[in-house]
Image (cartoon, rainbow, N blue to C red; front, side, top):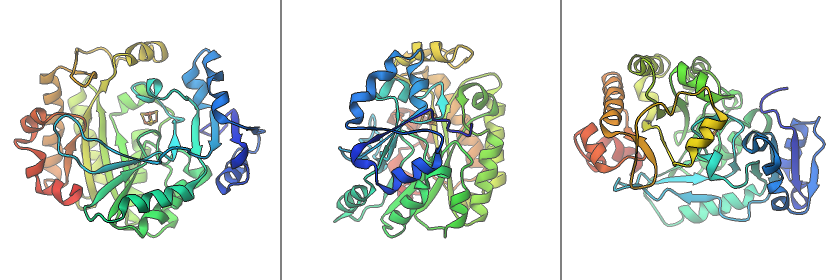
Length: 359
Ligand code: SF4
């Protein structure tokens, strides 16, 4: 069975004849889809399964998105807003990371694919109308941007939309090596292909179903050669055995496949989680060591490593990255201004590398 291995496909009646639905039916021909009047009526069936999260990852649900596609990142804890928009075209992810917030965040555990892409285009144009400030847009918040690309070709659709809207920079963020469709396309200045990276040890213990580091970076090398810009996200940074050496090696590996001028940005985010995720990780990933550290509850109700450990993580990575690429925009994810100043010696507002990219 090829990945992702769906065992059930649900299609909303009104979405039966959309191009995306036809592609999905062709991609998984061995599954007889169930046509339903209302997808939401079938949402809770998964709660009867021994592992509802895993069962949700095997279920694809296609139907129109009734709400908004675009959410603007509200900014966090005193950090300057980096103008990031999130597009929810796919919600849910077939990859299975121990630390994934979606295990507790989404009430609907299925992989939901919105079939009304034309409405997305209208919404993007409405959001972009009138403004001039650059914005970054990404689809990798509630799923992996390329996980379904071999079957559904969503990357090409999104790239075609944004190619003609240069005020926005689209980032497709992934833990896969699913880049074949991108190699057939003309690169565009406002499209960035981003990889979440970690040490091989963490990928192997905590990122089930994701590509290994070697394959991700081999894909990044091809993408760079083809003329695209790339980005890298060290998120989550996890304290584990010999992490300093491990992360320094990942930094070296990144710059062996991508010269600094092709790297649009790099982010650093330390492992953080809502307290309710602790039991989920223990139940679903009993072999993971990711919880074996000291955590504190922060004002945003997330558990984080104690401050000295977080600073050590960020400084180690920052020093390794800046030594290789002093001009590459580098930023922290979900950290307050105090941590930012301790790591970078100043606020993000004063960083000219960031201002150029984030506005
Ligand atoms: S790749 Fe991202 S969205 Fe998918 S399971 Fe891992 S953390 Fe969650």
